[in-house]
Length: 539
Image 1 (cartoon, rainbow, N blue to C red):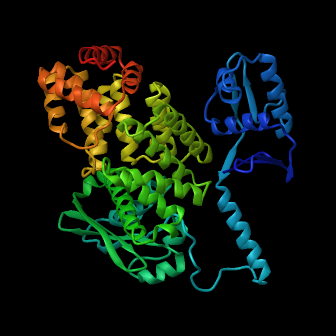
Image 2 (cartoon, rainbow, N blue to C red):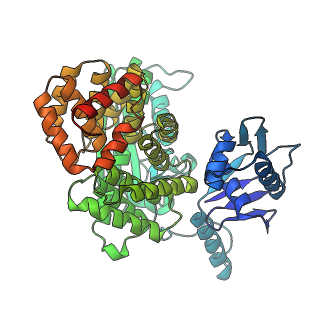
């Protein structure tokens, strides 16, 4: 990752600061402070955080911190008087206030290499003739304007029919929603909207725009109703991957618009991911690039306790090795490590936990705006006992990708454990609407159990826990919630059997660490967790 601010740029991979094109001679400690401030620029960084991050928690005087901050300001061309880039918040800490842009390092190098190659063959400026070979990486998607099939007798508004407004507004809203998805490359509106779906073939769109996938559709009126249809196609094979048709009353257009956009964006993302996975599975393992290795690895993470889960770590490590600057691959690797800890598959959990924290932090530093990286950080902090910081990172993930069902699922659980039960229920309803056929029911079932426990509906929680108990691959946090539900719901025989199952799968040290961690939210929830753990000798 390369961060740019003022007249400077900081290359994370090379660990190098350049200002006005020249390399700045700064100590590694000063550069480490700069990196931490850039990654944390959306918030205040306290002195204690700096000491923990840079000095490993050693006793450091305020004077020593002041000296390093002064050196950093000198390196980036700032001063204690101006504070244009780095602001001191008296008595609290520091905040990076300069405007920052960033770009993946490999993208910068690829662009430079392409420019050098063009100069070497003496090409003139201007667009190339014909399609070029597309490099490996996230697939590109073109969203085309909707075709108006019939306008009926509806009266125009300001010279335009309501149908024509819908035909332009919906694709634009979908483009905005898709732009939050880091796993897709979305072709800009100015390019894709030049290709009405009824005027060009999929091969034309693939050739002119370099699009791997194309979303097209139509809007029509019939009688007193409207209908909007969408179609997602693979431009290479010209096959249809997904279709959808929705009907509604004219007066419902604007109230249903957001829901329709969310649904289309979610289904498009899942359909492309499934298609890319199928394509990757046809490749020989030794020729997998980082993009396809990532998708196979992510798919394997959802297969616990099958042998494929064990393969996931190897495949994701392969993705990281193929592209060390690929933030999503590192974030996926961190998720795999996190699941390994939650499911009790690791021999040395303490060492593995430290490695998981490092992997998540590295992924976040490479791309602090990627929702998968933020989710990894959120889960790491949740398991570490800091529910407030966990919520912050998961909210950042949702802010980056509002339709990210996995992050929304975690957020709903945290909201509920924070006592915001109604808000958590609303978020959970959004998850179930976005992803009604989730492959693994554990996450939403866990949230429902926690809701019923918080509302003291222990009977309902126990019934739900019993239904889930035969599902394979349940994590410790869910098993703990199930135990509580069964115990307080009067299903003590089932609870005793479940406690033996827990003891058989997890080490005593792991159980003590889990049940003693204050990451269960509300005090009343912490108390019943401790009570159940003591009753069944789990601590």
